[in-house]
Image 1: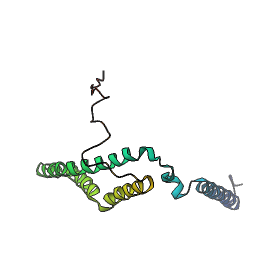
Image 2: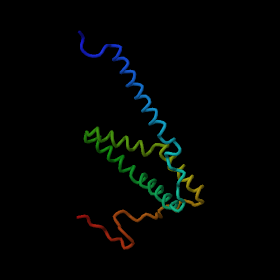
Image 3: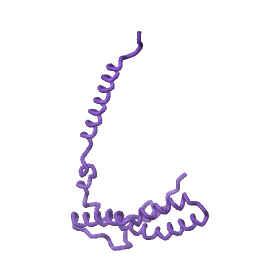
Image 4: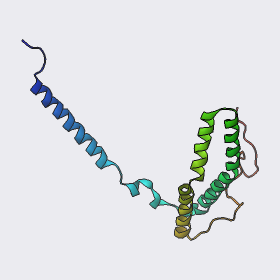
Length: 144
């Protein structure tokens, strides 16, 4: 007398399990939002246009300001024999210098300017307060 299930019964149970898993993943994939709707770009509020454009400009300025520092840090890490850190910094530099990253920022800027009929604020003028300030008086917050 054998114990357990026969081979045929095991195959039938396996087929049922695989079939139910396939239906579950197909249902989840069908319920997922499509590509363009998932991005949420269609709900941009033009009241925020100048603020977003200023943020894009600030990002570009921060990248330009930070790249020489990153190059120096990479060189220093290599000289000190810290290859892991140098590789990590190198990947970051490559990501920031990537033409597709700059093109993506330019594309967003152009879309906002076209949709909302506003232009980017002049360079150096940002609607964002300097970091470390909490309001118009410029009081620094103290965390305890």
